[in-house]
Amino acid sequence: MVSQSLSQVYPLQNYIDGCWMSAESAELLDVRNPATDEVLARVPLSGQVDVDVAVDAAAKAFPAWRATPPQERARYFFKLRQLLEEHREELARLITTEMGKTLDDARGEVQRGIENVETACGIPSLMMGYGLEDGAAQGIDEEVIYQPLGVFAAITPFNFPFMIACWFWPYAVACGNTFIVKPSEQVPIVQQRVFELIEQVGFPHGVINLVNGGKETADALLDHPMIKGISFVGSTRTAEYVYARAAASGKRVQASGGAKNAIVVMPDADLDVYLSTIMNSCFGSAGQRCLANSLIMPVAGAHDMTRSRLTEAAARLRIGHGLQPGVELGPVVSAAARERIVAAITHGVEEGAEAVLDGRTARVPEYPQGYFVGPTILDHVHPKMRVYNEEIFGPVVGMTPVHTLDEAITLLNANAYGNAASIFTRSGFAAREFRYRVETGNIGINVGVAAPVAYFPFSGAKRSFFGTLHPQGRDVVRFYTESKVVISRWTAGDGQPVTGVGR
Image 1 (cartoon, rainbow, N blue to C red):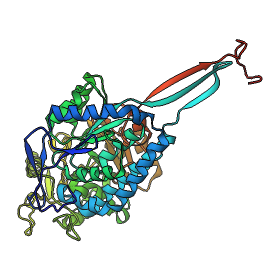
Image 2 (image 1 turned 180 degrees about the vertical axis):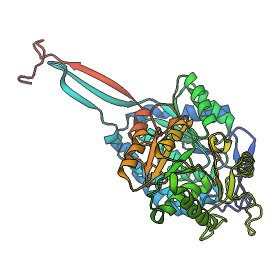
Image 3 (image 1 turned 90 degrees about the vertical axis):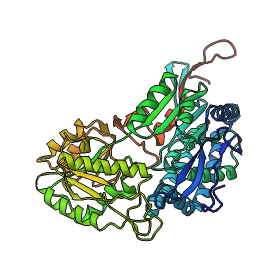
Image 4 (image 1 turned 90 degrees about the horizontal axis):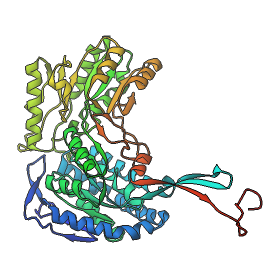
């Protein structure tokens, strides 16, 4: 298990029906430390048989779990929250080791995940319906109740291997559903450890299951007739595929895709106060997050100051292994990701962008095999360039100078993505115009990473989200439940309708 030393390579297992078991497939994929290229573990690429076993276990567990009162279900999550708190540093170090982000970034991820578990503890309130006596007519009462549906599954990405799973399964299970988690095959280790803690909590067998694997595993989940819905986070191309394939088999789907988030910097922005916030939004997690800001639009006279201050700060970032003290920029997740990011930078320069800061040749002498890309700033990026339109998912920022706020908003709304946008300004008028007119699901005002806390939905729009109900908060509770309208009329013992008199 993961509690053993990571210096020993071992095959990971699935957790199904309360038991650890090997996958039927003999195919194993290496899991590598992106800072060192060291093989940490081998993950099985589970197939249809493994998925069938997990779904059968979840389906059998559903009736009894559904009948468990919400307040009793919540008690399991109070226990889980306590265990996660006790192991938060261990979980953060596992995230850094297998994904590459700095330890501070990983600690932040663990905190956000735990906050979702905390919110799920409030499920008795989150699932409450509403009603009205004499709502339909005199003597006829009407109410709405919310009920769980059955088996759900989540397919989660590499960039937040702990937190994003917590957007989904705690809410679904607290609502009375049963669940299957399929983590990214690139970063499966932290979920292995989480499920060891889940086992300690003592959830009834089959309520929550773990199936490792790749595309074949995901397709088996998307197609399985007993799965009621799918939650997904990943690239837009894959999100669109997941949405279409799962919906074709009658499933509910919430599929979050990619982004091209932008910051608008007004001439009155206080860069002395907010520079570190902007820096974190661009280069935190090496730019590998769906709320990373990869475009900066300085308005009018803000360009020169923004360019010089950002370049100066980015050039000072310390690159290295995320577990090393003082490191501010870790590696990207894989050698393939590094090659893709470097190619995107090269293409941007060939298109005419100015490489004010070029991270293509970044190296860390202590870790010569690491997948490092240095902070990169490309100026004079315009909408006809690929580097402007395509998500790079790395520590790369394009600068697009604009003349007015109106021009910036027009460019933002013309973008195919709609995850997030932020503005930095001292003007209440500019901030209100921005929040009112910009067509993204998350808006930041003097906030770089517009990440909603757990009891608010993680909104996305346009090609950043496929579905209706978003992750987190009440949205996800509604996704995992069906509303039922109950209209009641009763008669007295003498057969007369009950009225409001003498009840």
